[in-house]
Length: 193
Image (cartoon, rainbow, N blue to C red; front, side, top):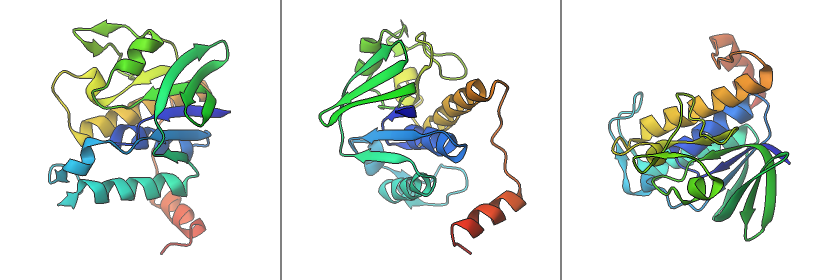
């Protein structure tokens, strides 16, 4: 059983995975690799001058791999159900259980609808933390917005969902803020310069 199940491996899903795994939660990502990022080239992402969308995704995947995220590549989620103990995500390979679910499936809202999340004007209704009307279920990116479909916005949505999950788990507002000494300790433990 995972702490966090994330459906979608684009900027929103991988951002959520990065934050949750980095902070000690067992995290699984299910990704069909159908993200729009493969059609993108980023000139408008802060801190990045110019990068192909697929190259950017590989960097994100490497980051989450470094933190131990269990990635299920080329794995389609066929259903998400709320249970007494959390959520069950169904795939052709079987069912996976977790305490939280983050939906990061781009503009596809089918899983949110089948889960029973409320909608507002054809988009999934979420609060500022990206939590849906279904407790401990989050929706991110294009499924919660009519028009603002940008990688940086989606990544921010994923981070907001992750920080809310971490706050719930820790019982107080949690902020993932690192200082240079943290980077030195982390990169030293990963064998990087």
